[in-house]
Length: 358
Image 1: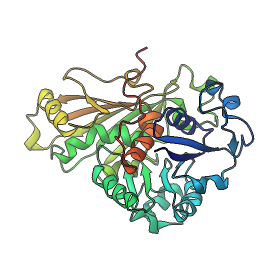
Image 2: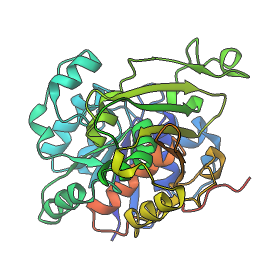
Image 3: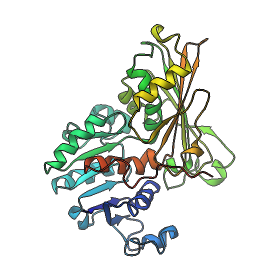
Image 4: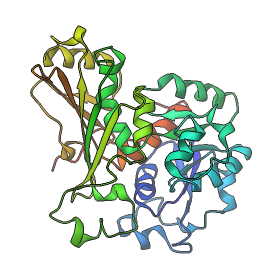
């Protein structure tokens, strides 16, 4: 049985990555793609990579209010924050499952959302029943909405952001196993490719600014900070500094975690073994051997996350490094992984397991 799906915001980078994945998915039929800016144009005209691809020939961008969306089994919202607030309630009322890639339903506390995003949350009642879309860390949450969906209710999934995904997958096992000291900052230095800033160019992402340059941005005020703190349960402790690198896609997050006295003698080999046990049965997370470090190029084009671990005994700190493709595991791939779970499918269905080797 094929489930019909639509993408709101399909002309953006995360949206078109969704189109790429969904057109090859054996259980999802892509029925509608929207873009207010590109309405009336064929997908293959805006993105020639789709020209001649089976299933893509009839796809033409419509506007975000396309009534076809309400006839779909699921709709992916690949839109900026606040746009999902406008779209999600009506789709849910129509019985459509919503997989939201924006930030609008990620934060559990609407006041925190309002403080960081500068707008009022217009549907806080939906936060209680939404699932947080990071399957490796919130399997029970997704399982709960999958059960409700199987019983006939539409589901709302708020997919984790790109920086929180790589950072949390790298750090969460250490936090949950009690290795992290109770006080002191947890330092996150993360680097992302230019697609993470969206399709619209600005002074920072313009070719002449981004090429041959690496720079920090939104220091001490990046909106992914409260999301990372919420996932890890480290309120007020995360010092997050994102950096922009001249890459199309890719994200590398290095997390420095102060070790608790009980974990002071932890070795890298012990950390690797514990992490592998933690992620056992999770096909998209690969914990590297001690001494190996992940690379963004090693996960490009895949839904994988590679994790590398090291221990600095002099400073009593665990260094956890996570690498993902910001467009795939950090956005579109993770959204499809969540949709697979909600619809009772194997979470690997239709998703690339192996990165582009070169």
